[in-house]
Length: 360
Image (tube, rainbow, N blue to C red; front, top):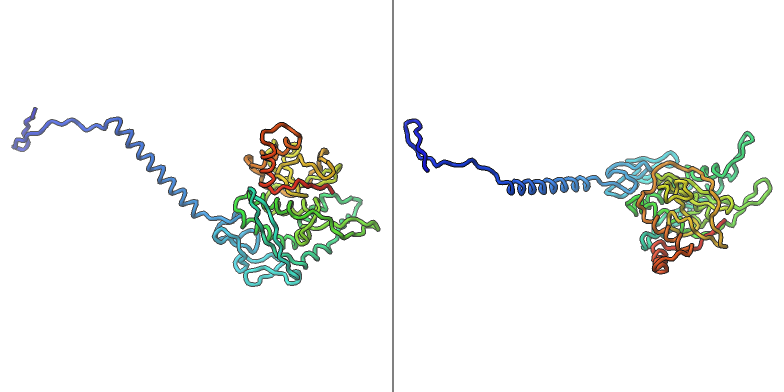
């Protein structure tokens, strides 16, 4: 019913109204819409932020110099920019490159193949005979003033830490980091490149106290000659993975006289519970596969000497190679497996396996 009131001498008819109340179902609909819009706005903001943070394969931010001189991160690619980033003391600047004309003689362009997920790829590298000759002339003897005896670790670390050699291997490491953007694929590429270097002894011999012994190549010689045996190729791979920031050791099985690389990983996937995953270097093999049978039916049964090379990052827990390596172990042991031949052939194609492995 209309209700009459008087205000300021006037008469007005006002309809009696109930106060406005939002019904519960509409309240929840509005809250839902606001939540969706907020989530979309945050997603767009995060995506925009990710696009703005552009990095190179070694983790260097776009527009900054890499720790590896003279490289500069330009839109996700490491490029030589000595005019901005400078050169290390062993080299001098020439334009945007760092050079050493005394050693950069007789250049040779090399192509190294590698496999990732069944796809064969290739990396080019310009090697110099001058650097090869330089490391070739380095003494293979370590002398101590006292009665100490040099160890295998001493020789390995000297070979890996040679500074001028490293300067001229940096372009290979950078080429890998430019070709593969994720740390896992960079590791896979490095491992596969070294594994696919042909296994071959050096024809050279050296005399030590009147005794003729086999010549041992430095990593740069392995690259230049595109040949090496397991100890030489192991040293090369340990150097590369060390420079990529991994926690690296070298496994030496004295009884079988064999070397391999170890990279820190979850203990359950590691070699003999050492905390380091086994990586064969004599031929193409799956990371963490230590069930390999070598030429002559030899298997690694002894516990290895562990030679620390560097401290750094570990392999992730979800690396797909762990599962594939476990299959290879069961396959070689003769376990019953469904479609095992089909699976085995698939893995051979995926990793470029040849199943030819050598003991020194």
